[in-house]
Image (cartoon, rainbow, N blue to C red; front, side):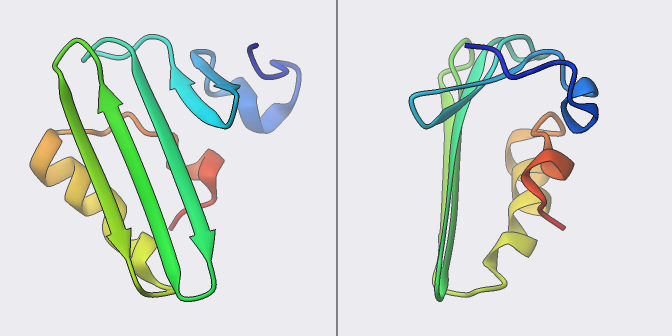
Length: 91
């Protein structure tokens, strides 16, 4: 089910949806993608898969600051500049 497109924070992401705990990017330059994030005391995690490319990246950290590495790693390794970082609240 698509997220409420009337909410201002989501208006910038027309191809973003969330279903059964998974984030869905319906259209990207790499094709559809799905992602999952996780936060806990002393651990930050993120996973994204681009189905058309058959490329996934799973980032598991044992640090409360681990999410600072997500964007640069995904950009450098997968060329991913598509993840809605501001929507996640990541730096």
